[in-house]
Image 1 (cartoon, rainbow, N blue to C red):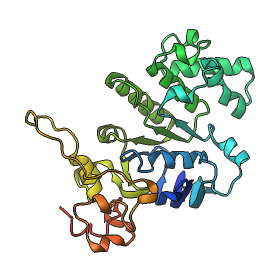
Image 2 (image 1 turned 180 degrees about the vertical axis):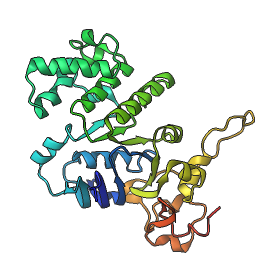
Image 3 (image 1 turned 90 degrees about the horizontal axis):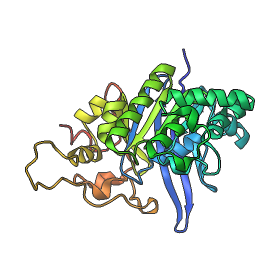
Image 4 (image 1 turned 30 degrees about the vertical axis):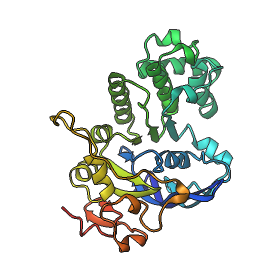
Length: 324
């Protein structure tokens, strides 16, 4: 029996804040195999980026983490920083949402793309530069040879994002994490970057975790989706099943809030009441309870995952009452 590429069990992260300890992740459970694509969706503040940083071993200083995080059967939470450095950028890589902050303004593009090749593959400067050029051509950067000696501020937003993707793919990772990779781009560039990532993932048979707040992006680019709220995975399953048969009130709220083609002029969009609370202000039990129109006293109990259908799970104590 083959080992899962990534297996997350009861993953919890607690941060130190000025108002005391705050639970950023509250018991996540999911798995990912080679070649699989998983979308992670939710409003800002739901824990999506914190999950990505945990998977990269880049948690803030003082953060406490528990549970299990296994990569090819090896427990990552028990390893030291030196082991994380050998893994990060080599077997697990990340495309950050803002390329201008992900790139070093003092170093040329060629040097930054070549760096993981020198660190993890032991290439000398000339060989690393040659491979860096090949990578920039793979991600379809215009005038790639000319851009090798350019600095980040000399490139457009879309070009910088292609450079960040090239850096992430340099060592042919097994898992690629893309955290809001198209947030700062216009619609045309968004489509190009997402198609580029999809092509490269399929070509290299990598696992992809795509983090986004955009349900349309998730629907078009992944096969499974996990909906997050309050540091908890409230719904998980095949993307078609979850988006066409949502079982959690939060998932339904996200879907109902989308603009509709053909809506009457001046028609107001539906909204989810309230806003995402601060981590230290999450209610007891279900984190969505304070905003949920179906709230009941039973919701003060911590939600556990229930199986709706094959591969489709929901963490809601009232899910049977709310079934369509």
